[in-house]
Length: 448
Image (cartoon, rainbow, N blue to C red; front, side, top):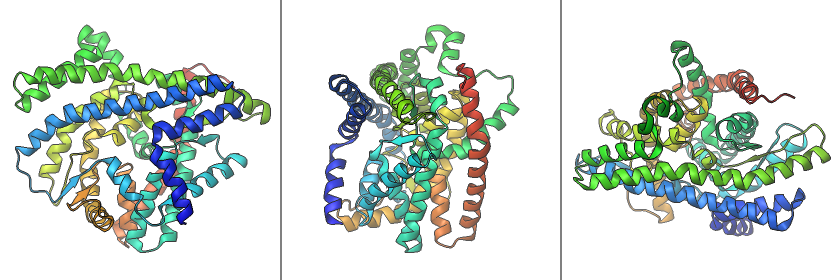
């Protein structure tokens, strides 16, 4: 166990921006790319990850900082402070059984590839921490490590199957070929796809309010930098920043302008490797088509995600302050990617629908964070990491983890919720996911 922990801790310490390019470089060599070209593509992927993370941090410091100022003026006394996703997953690695999840995920992925149950090669080892987090929560609830790992294994399988159904949707929305999304946050589309279909029936004649449609309607006021400037300036004025509100406007406009530019690097990096991998698979395994499983940032260049996130921040803060029995204050995870990124796929970039559902999800995220507060605080204090009460608002698949935790505790309502989620999951994988993928393929004009 200790040797395994040392090996994988070393890999983890490299960070996604180093570890994933190494994996992609090795894959490139295996599928026959020239070393120089494979290295260039892999390094470009690392640059893209660093660029996206810098912009997300930049948005958190500027826009998030302004909202934090607003919260401080409310003098809230909420017990648990949201520390964001990075510290939360960092804490998950303090769990004694955490490093067993690496071989478990790799083994399941390899077996499913060999028996033809998935076409996704998940190279996103960085997000093994999400399976660790799920297993940790369930184990805390029922005091049974085996059950915790069983639930995590189900999550791994569901993520891979979900990645199989996102290839053409991602290609349609981003232009990046042969890529799937085995990140757990996209399992929230078990709920979002049916809601999307319902909204389509309620508003059948409504055109999608995406960034391009906004540009068509209002001209330059629909440009990314103009939208960002207006939103940032308004936020700065509400935060009583005075003339500095104009600087916040420019900073927000800068972020929304640079996101699509940096996102193009993912296509530059992945297209050569995807094409080489596709040719290699066709030769070695006729009839199969390999897709590369990556993290969500390949979607980050789409401004619809960031507009929905910014619109959600004040609503999330208001819910944190007014919800009865809520004990969690959203702070570190104000950039609510875990909901808005999967909503981008589910709503096909419709900003109005994305924002509405994101608002509806805020209470769920608050109560889930309240439930996790004691567990994370206890783990942090045991590990000697923090001496304050902490939690994770905006937890990936918070609604599913919340239900699993309550069910594992023996809560009848939690058990009922898990049963409902399983039923929704079956309908999603049997009906909604295949239909969406088929429709995306038809819109792209792709035929078998």
